[in-house]
Picture 1 (cartoon, one colour):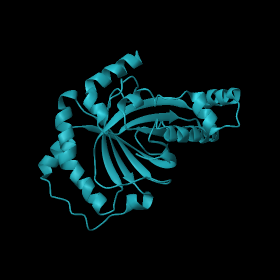
Picture 2 (tube, rainbow, N blue to C red; picture 1 turned 30 degrees about the vertical axis):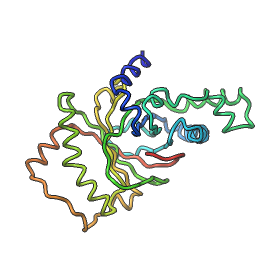
Picture 3 (spheres, rainbow, N blue to C red; picture 1 turned 120 degrees about the vertical axis):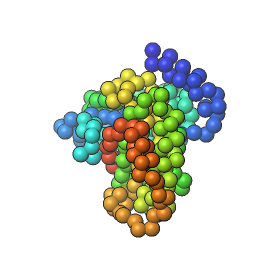
Picture 4 (cartoon, rainbow, N blue to C red; picture 1 turned 135 degrees about the horizontal axis):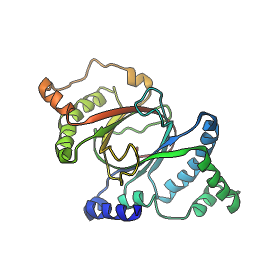
Amino acid sequence: MKKIIFLIAIILFGNNAISQKKTYLLFEFMKVAPEQESAYLETERFWEKIHGQRVLNGEIEGWYLLRMEAGGENPDYQYVTVQVFQDLEKMVQNGGGESFLKIAKKAFPDMSDADLLYKRTESLKSRDLAETFYMEQIDRTKGKFEMSSGAVVGINFMKVSPANYADYENTESKIFKPEWQSRVDARAIGSWSLLKVINSKENTLSKEISYVSLDKFRNYSQLLFIPNNMNISPVDPAVWQEALAKREISTGRAVLIKKTGNGF
């Protein structure tokens, strides 16, 4: 059923969406019990090498592991992984390409097939995959920014009525984006981007979320930095309030702890 829904999504996006160079992101939020944290991190060390091989194979552009920080509005998730694609079909097929064993043998040539399959099975026991988001990046600030370990990401989940999608996207691009661009230019933030959720909306959170915006900082020092050289065009307070009212927002914050490849 999922594959049918995703194939319909591909048709709706059309050949033009697939052929153009775009960025698609697969977010997977994990619940990890305190007593399983060390086992989970060991699991991700294993998967880091697998995903590194997938980058070399051209199946994905990058893979990232982030730790969710305490104090957000979704405290049930302790970690999130992000896979980056430049092809919608590849995202839907989770990269496609070679089988797990073929990729794993390249990443771990000294391990037997049985050991690799056992490692994969055991890795599922250290976490609960709680939420999955398939998303397309539809806008972002100018400038090149690549995160490294210790980078901080604000993750903002937006509830928007379907009837207001076009109006909301226009609001983000015309009102909010210029402010973020001024912050980027002043080196107060690394980058900002807006993502549109395109998955089948089967999970508790993602079935209600239409958009996600990402505020990326080099580290906490940049997050806490308040520049005095930002050139922000004044916006009428009434217009600003109207823009804010176009969506309901809940926020979270995460810190990058591992990555392979680029693109996020």
